[in-house]
Length: 425
Image 1: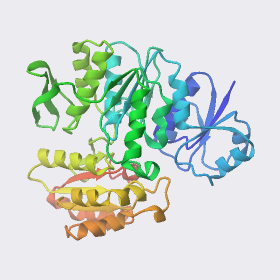
Image 2: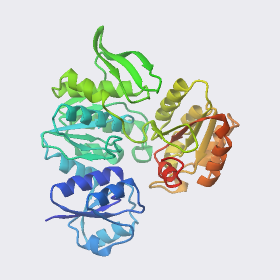
Image 3: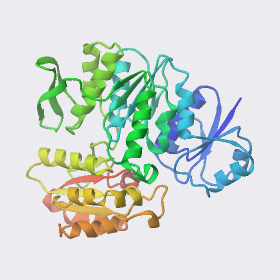
Image 4: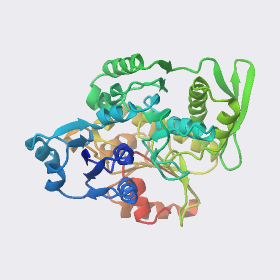
């Protein structure tokens, strides 16, 4: 039996791949720096996780799977190199696993990948197709980032970082959009666009525009749920009433609709799949708080995503004070998109900033959350920076009597901190 050891196994994509491998009968274990949702799911699926250096685990493995977050000086990676172990990337492994399925459905793009991927999986499941899923987020329905299905459909996010999506050979590729992102790797937007062109050439079929499909009569219900009609030109296709709030989901719905039509799914199942879809965690997710009436968590970490989340909150809660709490993800992204971040936040009622989630980077590789706050403060004197959760919590408590709408933004660990501190439940 081949033995796999994952470096950074708790990551949302890595943990899903580990479970998919174990389901195929392989021996799987790995290491991570911290405990979180991913490591908890792994433990529930019988996969051991080391939170320190396990030399025996490395030595006993046939294949080492490396997350992009693992640096060359990581002790696990150094040991694996010293022992001449076969080392593959997360993207390589995803390509190998997906090759076992008849039709790979891969969703690429700078924004909207997770939701669109999960929508497609939900529609296929409703239609009785039993797809296998690899997701870069956690479904609200079952808190899972994977689904073990049959061999016809493999539905996956196709991440462009480190060109990971170029290991896939999709039957159907979806490109939701392409914007400046991951410039720490691509260096230029031209390089990024070139990578997406290479991805499209690897697909048998590609969906990259709406093809005449559009959403009309868009509105929200009393609880914020999105309502609209899908049209093909002047012909109404279906009426949709979603559990989701953000208006960007009308675009995600169109891509999911087009993908599933290409896969031969009837409209009745598409409608049922979209309307029963509960969303994924931290995608404009309304969460419960013992002290505040209206709290949302959103994974948005790019200015475009942040702007859409803010506009949704402002539209639904027109007369209430909006407080955004943003945790930047990586120093390099903050620096490369600084002007766009400032433009987005300078018009928010109360823009707050929490210390940067460094992920794979060092502070010297860009600008910090505090740097961003100082730039926003030049235009908005309500901007505040917080280096620890206790200070942030105390400030939010001071606003409690104003019944604000709290919108936590970012792809870092702030949602985990909120749970641990019981700020949200």
